[in-house]
Length: 268
Image (tube, rainbow, N blue to C red; front, side, top):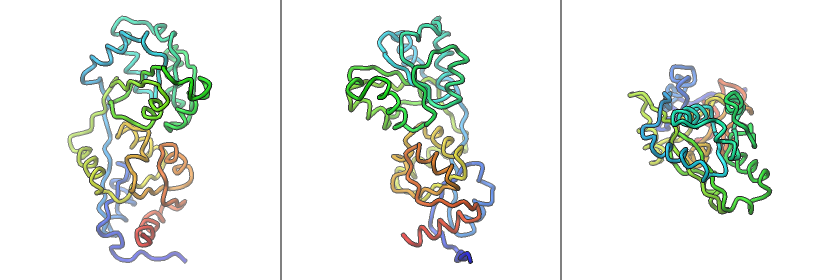
């Protein structure tokens, strides 16, 4: 027999959910139990605001040994800028190329970009491991120069791990993600930095990937350190793990998510 939620069992707790759940049953149940429900924003993708750094990197491709493409946006905007500056796709032939994820690889292949390393797992550890294996060990990373088109220039786990073994990684803004006026992204970042979010709930693997794109990181574990992570089913949990998240609550029953959160916080 299932336990019954006590009235306002999540009073004082702030839970982050996907925009798809903003008007859904999960948000309704959470609010009914006294939780404050926040959603992360949907983002529009556009040209980099200041492309000069990207242009400089493109003009100096000979100074790089590798390129890493994390997603389709990185491919599309980098190649568009490459050709705008009068370069050919074949200019990448002198570099090693890592493609991350099936859709990214497909887009690279469509654009006739050769690919040396493919990883279907999006985690920074998986990317590092794949490149390490290709070059023949961590010692072989020393002195290598990596160019990584991104939506920003925030440091991350991959960059730090590469640099630890003597590689240089340039994260260059090739595009930007722009939240809507009412997105609350600044507010969410402030709450994350100040410990104002108690829990994040994912109902699908796409939720995890979307949030990683919003925050422009493959290392969600660092962002959500000390925050409860709730996942619906094992597939969602596996995706969360790929982004270095440690899952605190897993349930296969959608109607059991809120009960599981209440039990988690009560036990804590």
